[in-house]
Image 1: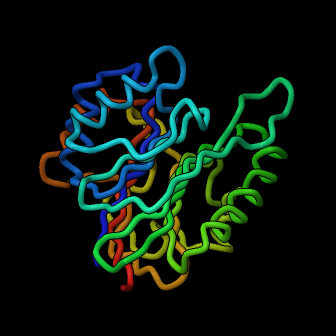
Image 2 (image 1 turned 60 degrees about the vertical axis):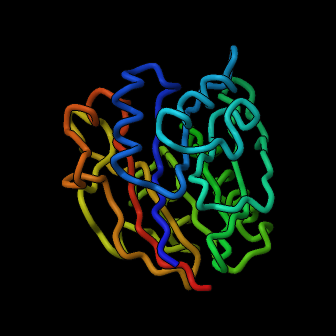
Image 3 (image 1 turned 180 degrees about the horizontal axis):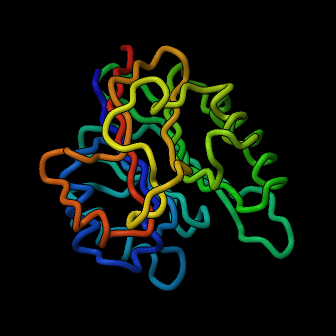
Length: 233
């Protein structure tokens, strides 16, 4: 079963919301793993508006996870969800994980959206909790998407990539760098998979029909990562 997964830090929808919706729609994802979703006043309504404008449905996360959120098409059958708040270091932002188990036909897939800490020590500890949660989903195949706040040479990124498959490294497609849109020079956003999930292509969706450069610049302070995956039945 081929599944399209988009991971996107949307900066709490503080930028051009119409451009954001157009980018998501043009990527035609089955799953959208959001970071920095609205999480304060009337955040549920904002999440629902984003989902509706992009032709998707809300699955889980947002205010309940301090930012990570999952959206999907109706093609996905949601078996269960769990919102997790990670231990908080005083003086630093609260972080969390939005998780779900979904089915596409007979293909069953665990899903995690994450946004890791800016602080190196806390970020590294959060990677350990993230990997434990992937195992705790209890499914053979899973996808993780998120803003790692770390580059591929960083110890936290390397820890994730040592346990999971880095989509860009496996099958680069489109652009590599995700931050910042106006002068991309680093890859801090990524999609990872467990063993057995085949990555057909992964990267910033430059050249994808309908994805306009102007919209990518206007939608957020991050560029999205689009991964096309083949999930065994």
